[in-house]
Amino acid sequence: MPDEGLPQTPSFALHGRRAVVTGAGRGIGLAAAAALAQAGAAVTLVARSGGEIEAGAAAIRAHGGIATAACLDVTDIAAVAAFFDGQPAFDVLVNNAGTNRPMPMTQVSPADYDAVLDLNVKSAFFVAQSAARALIRDGKAGSLIHMGSQMGHVGGPNRSLYCASKWALEGMSKAMALDLASHGIRSNTIAPTFIETPMTKPFFENAAFKASVLDKIKLGRIGRVEDLMGAIVFLASDASALMTGTSMVVDGGWTAE
Picture 1 (spheres, rainbow, N blue to C red):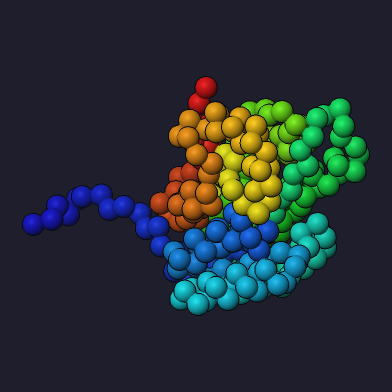
Picture 2 (cartoon, rainbow, N blue to C red):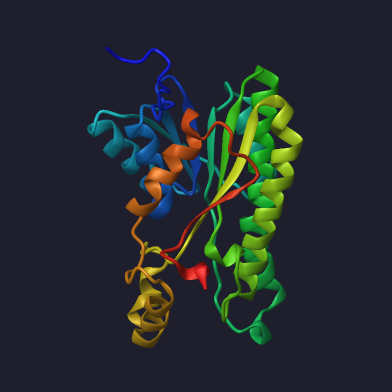
């Protein structure tokens, strides 16, 4: 006879919840959208270009999920605000849109700085702000998941801009967690190691670079988008109900030494 006092695992299911993923056309963003849909959420895929997100949403629907696509340039702050203001609040945000311009810090131009920091920090901030305002407006709890990086916890050669942006994202998320806790809105980051995506694949064609990366990833392989899908569902779900203001580092051991 089962023990009536036996603890029950909180649900990882997301049925009845609405989720939005930025930068969802490919790579980590598409995997995040798929993971949330597979857990039962109704997912909106957001990106500037319609073709990729339309294809991604169609693929999710073909596998039995609920998904729509919405063209939105997250660098357009007014458009972001209008997008979130014009519909019911999303229970889950995956704040994923980002970019990288790897180069020695001595070669960074103001244009490079603006391109990386404006998208990775400024846009991420105002997307999160708009998502949180909608949740507060609708009186709902929610989960903000910011896609950070192991480079938000350590430094890396030729990564001065990227590190600056991802360290900023970590601090932003912690402060947001404090501001939003009274509303039941959680804010956390996921900090992956190098994940093979369309954006990173060209880097790994450099054999010396690939070898240097594999030397630091103690589990001995470059990450796959699938390695992040469980963390995304966990942070979106009731299973992580007491987690806010922290970072899930999914780095194969990179930052352990």
